[in-house]
Length: 145
Image (cartoon, rainbow, N blue to C red; front, top):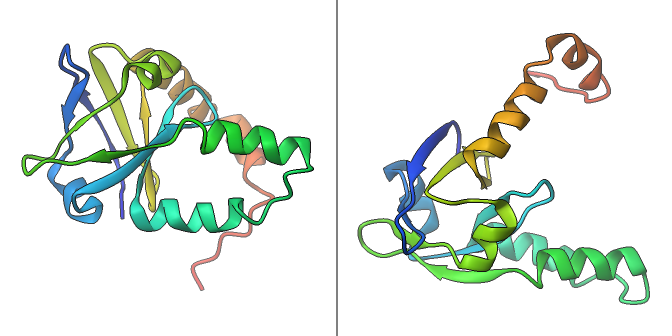
């Protein structure tokens, strides 16, 4: 599982080295696709497969389903993770997420999000609105039992 966040350098060739705790779960292959908030999703084969199993059940006659498929599947690529934990982010995905020479990786349990530092900063400001958070998350039933 992926937790925490860190900022990592990105080479001119758009390559980065994953933190050690991210490498084992990813094995040698992962999937990268557009996220919903101008970020990228980095998914293990298992996580991508679970989402795909739901997506393939969607009706292609539903315009929202087609839109989601274009976003999620239309931009998805299988990427190799070399023995050093290095991955390459395609230029089109870097442009979509406004990622240049640094990337913020944020663990989300079963997957990770990749953000440009400037877009992550805006997201972090949103997350730090403590007064709003009191009411934002009250609809979720979160129990330790």
